[in-house]
Amino acid sequence: MDIICFSHLRWDFVYQRPQHLLSRFSNNHRVYFIEEPFYRCEANGLDVSRRQENLWVVTCNLQADYGDSKGAAEFEKLLAEFFSACQISQQVFWYYTPMALLYTGSFEPELVIYDCMDELSAFKFAPAELKDLEARLLEKADLVFTGGYSLFESKKNAAASVHLFPSSIDKAHFKKARDIIAIPQDQQGIPHPRIGFYGVLDERLDINLLSSIASLRPDWHFILIGPIVKIDEHTLPHAGNIHYLGQKNYDELPAYLAGWDIAMLCFAINESTRFISPTKTPEYLAAGKPVISTPIKDVIREYGVSGMISIVSSPEDFVKAAETMIDMPLPDSWQRRVDEYLSQKSWERTVADMQELIYQAFESKSLLKQKQRI
Image (tube, rainbow, N blue to C red; front, side):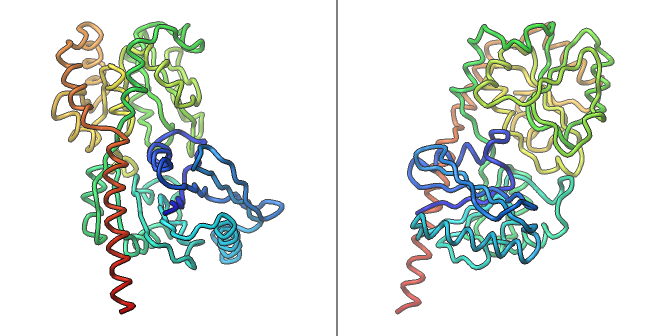
């Protein structure tokens, strides 16, 4: 089986769930990662780049918007020619975006998977037709995976086969932060205590909270790593103790984490964060960092109730929790408890469990087709 993934995220953007999963699936399958097209280009065509032995990233350039019938038809034609040239026969279509239904309607894959990692319709600038397309995809999908508990509760009755696969962890990668001494140059001059966050800086970031805690404790320094997306950079709080270091690649993150005193999940509580299950939560913990989070439902459920991280609802609560962490470092027993919990989580285990479901679904459909032919 060849896995054809249709994603709203670009492979070279922030390294997260799609990259973790599909890079591991490529150990056993050919994987083609189809990015959403660029449009208003001079000519129609596909750019293909090989990233791993069995993994290719495919980007389409279109003259017309893929949202209209002409652009969608051209994209579909280019994909059909590409699949034929690559001799792709047994296709597993893996969707991250329901919008891809606009240009995949004529194909008949052996299996359809919807890995629902976010409630995309709640995000800023979400297309108006996204909800209707997702309803069609949920009906069409042979398997639906959800990236968190809240999403699972939301989708479990919307499709025939829905399975919970929360954010997992590459423990060895982030555990390196416990032993790193050399700090990246752009972080070296920032005084302690350092409180850090990495991820996409968008409408989910609680800019009011960040501004308030930076004002309450001007002697603390707040480090934010990641691209600024969908919001005006000028709306972000700016102060002498807030440092925006830009986007870093995945391999660099442990070195930045190593120099932080506290890691934070500085998310606003709004519609766009209602269903999120941040992958960075277990990554922070694997790095051995104490974590402070706003009351994100999935974070509370998995890490807050057990006391592995501190949950706060106001700037004053944040400052109080951080003061405690700075004055009284967490005991070794906390780290042992965290490590024991994380020992049950890995992207390899997630892929193995997903793969078992995929094989079962593939076999069931094959048997059904045989019966229909008889």
